Image (cartoon, rainbow, N blue to C red; front, side):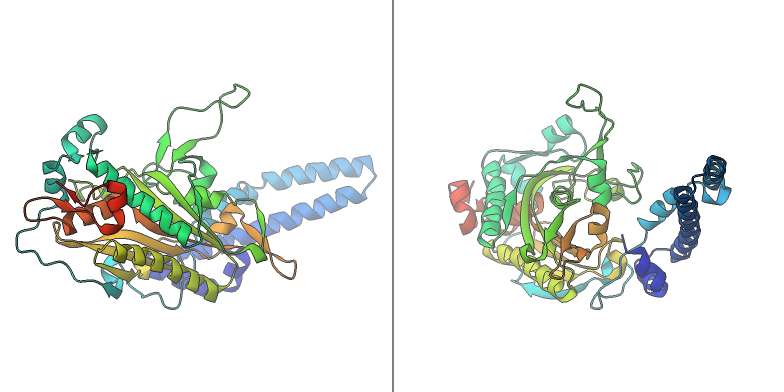
Length: 426
């Protein structure tokens, strides 16, 4: 979330960001109105408390206690903190000066290309046909066992997809990232704090998150009151690792990388990519996260560094790709600056997202309370950035479709051959 002081002092800047992100700017005026009432309540409450501390008269103490109670019961003050919190989490982040203004993904800007889409002397097949014929994918049994969007990866396909993950992890170590396998079953504050809920709490109608119905037990044996959810990426768990922490500026930036299974309900994607493994409910991914000092110029450099590593891996895998800068209308509320990487899929005859990089500034850090002490001893909220190093399904698809041969085999990219144990799958 944004600093309320910044919102008070710069309402037009925040309204402009809201309009460009397709959010009703009226929410800023509503927040400021609630904030004004909230501050009146806080001031009145503090005045009464100060009087209570001063008085030694019992009757006066009783009168002040009753006055304090009536203050809380005033209609305009009832639930004011809850209203304030509900509105604060809906206020969008500001937007970087270089972000293109647009209304949808059609307005994203193509800023970099590497490689040319491969020309075949035969009609290229898609990953569904290739994977099925090679017995490395089974969608029929996947749907039978897991339901819609279910799939099995089999035989050399397992070695290939795990090879992609191991290759990405080794690259992260090479680039100075600390490795983690974070929890994928997390508490509500992890997803609320990182902005994966549209509001303060989970809403199954709009949040593409799986809630776990079975309650946990605490160490005492009592039923836990904490709701649990499955993460859609390692990012929330990695960020929450630093929640309520006060770091040191000299230790920043902190570069961490997480390998995890990912779960997404895809409720907003009804009717899209109904076949294959392009859009599925569960998959594996290697995710980068950086905790940085509150410096705009440095944050831009770190984000460019992160996308550069993903680009380097696409190049070493021999996958033609492009980098898009995301326009304002295609950004989620919390993002300040964002990029996507897309690989070319010849069998599907399209560009396909294989990663996204986002800079949230301190928008997530304020929600998760991730702070650091600067050189002057002042406490500041950190800037938090994330990027997809490599996702398993779409890079897997890209390799099958780009490395297919006329006789239906798959040549294994050189950097993955040591994991697969052969040069050709067929």
